[in-house]
Length: 193
Image (cartoon, helix red, strand yellow):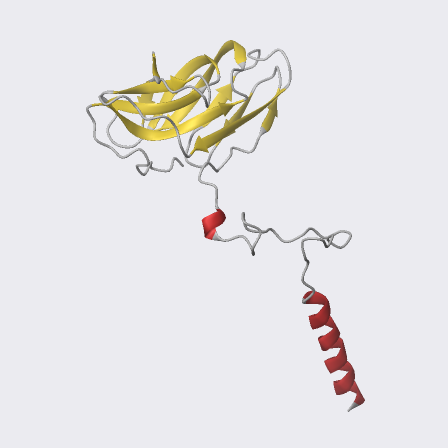
């Protein structure tokens, strides 16, 4: 009987300890992080709190020896040895909102920010941009940065599968577009394996 009572007391103590709710003014216990909160702070994180500009290619520190940063959908930057003269943290992310394309163009893939914006390379780097649909009549367009509203055509680029490989010497915001092709801006882009 005493063993059962002891177990019940221990179980109740555990429930009470686990049930402690942190208020805005509580600090998390040492060694424990506070539970993530929703954007409005009213409760736990939900699907509605997801930020559509994610995912971010895990930032990678790249130096003179080069490196690659990529996203699960195949978007990537390949930096060859000697392209950077100093160590730089490189990231790739999907943008949720960008300026509209001119009427004669349509989005064939998502817009990607290669960061840090404006980074200049000593040698060209290769961007890989996923796109949907056939590879005809497509090319890359870019914005200088998040405040730019005028898409510019980027020369070059070669399609292989559902990726457009593009050689550039600086980072901007890039997107695959097509002429006279009707595709929604957020069209499903096949995952590259």
